[in-house]
Image (cartoon, rainbow, N blue to C red; front, side):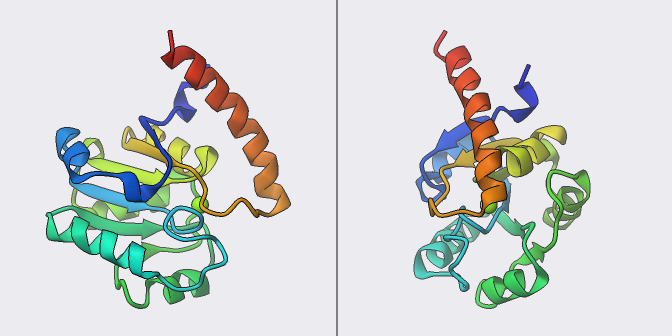
Length: 167
Ligand SMILES: [Mg+2]
């Protein structure tokens, strides 16, 4: 019953995503969340790890953009050095920010992966448009109360997901 919330892939970190697995799944574009996916939500600027990883993706022909529910200021500051196409205040899981990103990437939804740490924004948004969804473990365990409530429901979805995938 939770299929729309099921990720196609679950990883401990975005930095564990390998080029080979993207190629294998014919992924040519990435739509990436910022907070707790690329960096902890309280880190203001892109760090060395995120910059190097994104650089490596781009060098290998993978198109990359950012889609964040966070504010304009947060996204602009984070993107200062990366200079990627970025959508702020995205209101994920609505389709609009993802459609904007797809238009920029010029990739078909089936060739595009959404990477994020939240089921009800990143994974759901990806699945609604039939994109490949990759769920990563949130970088920082310290989160706002509203997100902690969502985590409670995420756990229920993941429990069922794992139960089904172990059959
Ligand atoms: Mg996030």
